[in-house]
Length: 112
Length: 117
Image 1 (cartoon, rainbow over the protein chains, first blue to last red):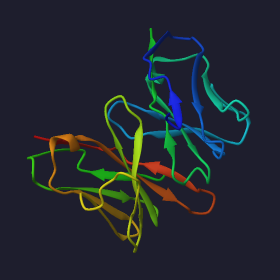
Image 2: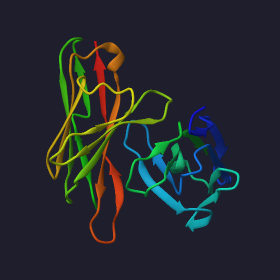
Image 3: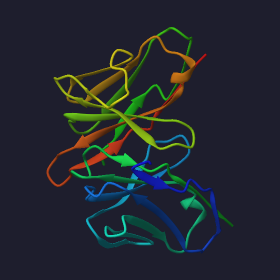
Image 4: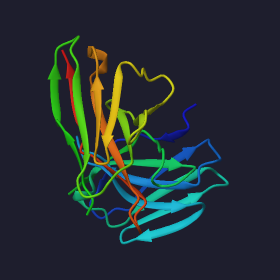
């Protein structure tokens, strides 16, 4: 079993839709939870991070962590074609600038 | 903002030859850099942690003698794939840890596509 599981998609939604991206994990030591966006053939860029359980909102993006269920989510409101990318969840037990364990990434396509 | 640069972005080499990939932090010093490999439709897999002035720490299953890492300065780490084979073809990405005051985050490079023919 992989430490971090993520549905690879692809996920196709119309412009303006609410997108829900999810990851599950098995390592209860993970404390830091990150979401990265990766455009085709580029390096990932950090979107958001959350420490321990709870919600965090940044503009159209909301990250949720439920440590009891070992389940994290990223919600994108009012999705735009420019949101089309691969979204990777990443986790660490020591910090956002430490060794990260990534999910496979979910490929999102927002259509006009 | 902080930028991490990787070079080359694409490289094709013949089987049996060696190829070097550079990772530079452009506006901050990075005592720690990370090297990842990403196969198509798969997640980034950490290969090794590169520490300036000391030996790299390799993840289980990664061949130290095949993937040579050198972190000779605070802004440069290199990954050399020795005696490359077609199965080494992949997307290699580095990241650098920014520990400046108020930062403490990781920035990724743009990645390097390696094709071994």
